[in-house]
Length: 415
Image 1 (tube, helix red, strand yellow):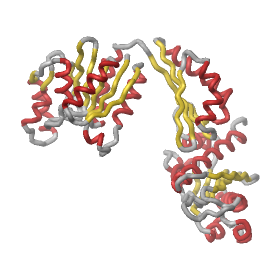
Image 2 (spheres, one colour; image 1 turned 120 degrees about the vertical axis):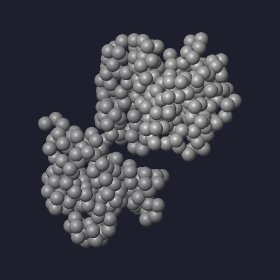
Image 3 (cartoon, helix red, strand yellow; image 1 turned 30 degrees about the vertical axis):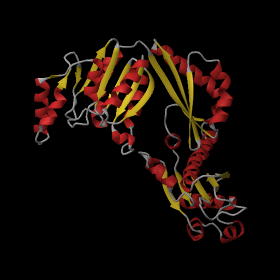
Image 4 (cartoon, helix red, strand yellow; image 1 turned 45 degrees about the vertical axis):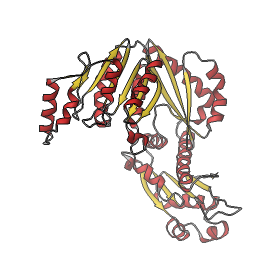
């Protein structure tokens, strides 16, 4: 069945709040096997809400609205939906009592306009609001359905559990999907590599998404048999590994720092970091992971040349001859850190994040990163052109994790 989501609220159009409800509902509906066709946002205007309902229901079977269920005069979504279906509203005494009890529980006085929230059509399915005073409802007429939900996510999300129970009985379809996360290949290049697979598929669909330094694939199969839908996706992923396996780092939606953390934990390894241009961002992302103390020993911000020399023992000769941003300095930082930390692995990064400080030989965006296990040190040169200072720093950290991931794959994965 085809679904539209209609988010009501002038504050959404003004950008005063983020429309997280659309994202939540889309994911939930897709998991249930529904096809989400449209997202609409409309202000608190009766004629526009009614017009948008008409447009949505002309092309979809179900419209789920959010917002506009409160007690004030601009909360009109339920009233407009009932008007559209030609359903008169009646006062429900039991809902009045429920609202009164909630105000007593909240230790607040109840205004007369709160009674508006107790009016519903006689044949509506009324949805209890465990965290607010505005009930939701499900309306049905001529095989068309409108579901009215409150706007605040803390009220909408738990209420949607009741809606899911209702919706499950409306479709026999099941959707199974997985996100394949890759790094080191752009969206267009990735698509080119897998195009023959995509073109020859009938049981799965593939969508690509690009972010800073990463590309994701969403592999989806829809089938009346859930086991078959899952099998379709898993079989396609096997084929993907033959094409782009060197770029894949996750098939279960984990981000790269988490994947690297879990590998370090699995191999019982400790890691330390020495950062210049990233200013501790790598250490911060590592420490954000619960349990990181099991693998992360220390992080040193050696921003100045003096810090590189005094803390990491990078020789003054190396700094004078090659400069702070160089292969030699990155290597010396990693090696120096290994000596003072006694970690199993040490990583370093030094570069020019900009917006100033670049030269013809060493432009803004030039970054060197290194990894050492005490025996060998590997250095990688990156040039992030036409990026902001923050993006250069974020991309550097991401590529540090990729460096560690590859190191572990090459030295530990096949042991």
